[in-house]
Image (cartoon, rainbow, N blue to C red; front, side, top):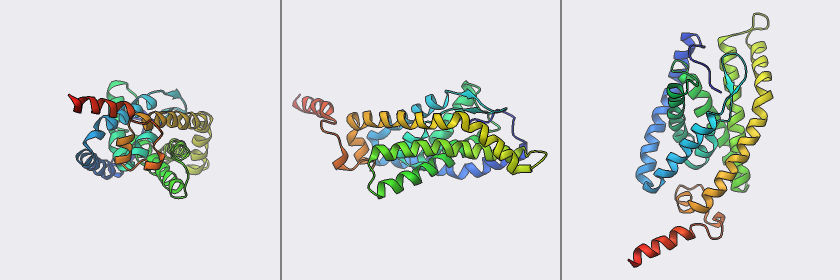
Length: 241
């Protein structure tokens, strides 16, 4: 979810910016390291950033001062890990604030923390646990995208409740109200996002299998039959010339 420009009290806006900053700086360094170690992953890196931009730009009105939407962070988190997604997510949110008036500059830190940090890390924890237990890549990717989306809305509800506690019942009353309203739209959105992310990963497993292997996302036994045949044929033709 994107909290609107100027909606958070200044002290809260500053605090969330400070909390998010170390993750974003480390993520930027990891992007540089990834590109240096895997130069061919550059287009894939741009693609997952674009995917998150498009998915999270599809917004549905929710509670006052916020909106519900897919996050699109599951794809980049699965392939490049959460630190890289923290930086990519920040770029996505910055461009949306400047170009689409979606979110805002004063609330950028809060939005980054919920969508680009908390969601991806929670989703990746589930993804990692499932993969370690032998679950296939596609079910694990679905779980990652689903959890990352839901945790984003939980953290946004926490942020709003912390800033605007209810006059009766305080923080917990407000938190429950925000969670209840968001759940109406966010739970089905999380399911749809998980399914879309799985479809995209299946396509990438066919057209970018070598990059996914190099990044450690796929095991060699999981590469689909015929994956990369078109690129290998092109490489052979270039070598023959």
